[in-house]
Length: 484
Figure: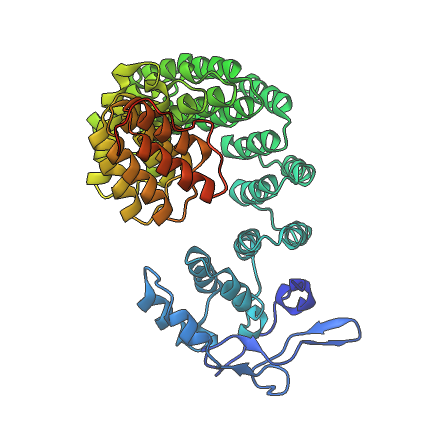
């Protein structure tokens, strides 16, 4: 971005112009210099101060101002009737409407309206530049403003410091803080909060913690956001217990924690592999009348699932359902897979897994390929073969191609129950869906045909395997003369 100082006439107080309608604000030519003195253009000089109507007015008309009529009425006035206060009001309205570019365009033509910016004008422009992420220019405007006798207020300083901190420019932020002290502008809690977050953002948590302690010594009482910033910093570097200590300190001071501060702790404990500490956080939230939101529960559940605490995650899920919170689809899939795997050893969880699976299907959630596979395997392990076969067909009907291991789970379950015909149908289904049965697929069928004394069936399966280039370990046995 070119510096606004490329149009230096905006910093001087030109003679007011007359008879020029203020419809639009883009100058055709730059102000001229004479003997080192900057001469402001006048509306009577068409060569140097012509205002183009273009589409600027249409742009502003399209902006959803709270007081659109008042603003447009103001723009219709002659330049001689404009006041700096009204000009600043329009600048602020554009900034509030998130139209920083238009505000800058208006500002760049201030001199053409016979207006000289004051401290409030410069403060608004600093905010515009911060919004546009042009922080170098914002700092130049700040210095120019102060050099010309205009002292920014604490809000303007804080906005610039916050923008610098968010981009990791802490050195510049602290220089601005020094400028504040130089003119006797005392930083407030919000100023320090920006610095605290900035320090934690670049990993300087100890320095941020020291600043927090100094705030208390200087009789500047930190607010809950001050503590939130440091707690977040501690949690990100694996020091969640210290973050909890800060929370307790904030409670002693009578501060009311919000849901964000608690969610920070959930994330911290998850990162450290101690998600179950989240239950203590959850209890503390309720004790302090801070209602957990869906993010609180989801973060806790995510950590529990990540670290294999499936039963605990199921407990959180049921509590969420009782409250009326919806669980995100991917989270449900993760919980379902966790329940399925856990149920292979702890059979009492099978019912929970199947209920969740059924609920996902009925409420229109997309049950992914992996979830189907886990559920079918679980059903096979508890010998619920009718359901397993049904969901295998359903899975295929949805366009999923089951993995070979899923087909094998069903073949094995059917074979164990002696349902060799149904098992053979599953083998054929594999062929039909472009899957080449594995050696294990054929072995299970040959074994069951042999067990039932069906030599011809065993031979047919064995021959089919050889035709596919697969040599089964199991071979047909002449146990009796029964045929398939």
